[in-house]
Length: 116
Image (cartoon, rainbow, N blue to C red):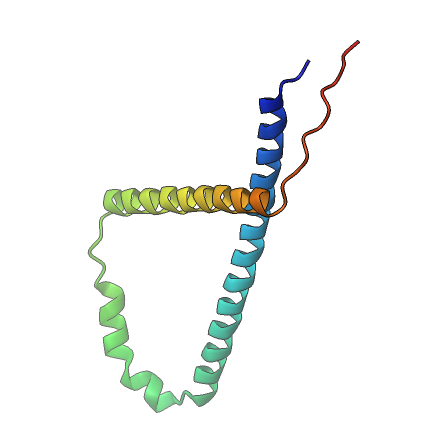
């Protein structure tokens, strides 16, 4: 026999899943828009670029590339912290959206299964 709390947790998990799907869809739209705008800006810069303008900034560009002062262990640590933070934000926002969905559209509890 199932109790009422397991029914609620199944609905809560479903709403959290829906919230995460909604979050991924919103993130995909925002990232896609950003990438396409960035690509369009790069294309416009490429059309306006002349050989003189390209070669004039060569030394500054080269110096910027060679001015890397971060070590590998620090880079790995920073990347790990950023990835952990990204997943934490994703999980929290998914749970919050799931809670919002469950409050906006409450589900009726199912009748308990009578069993064999």
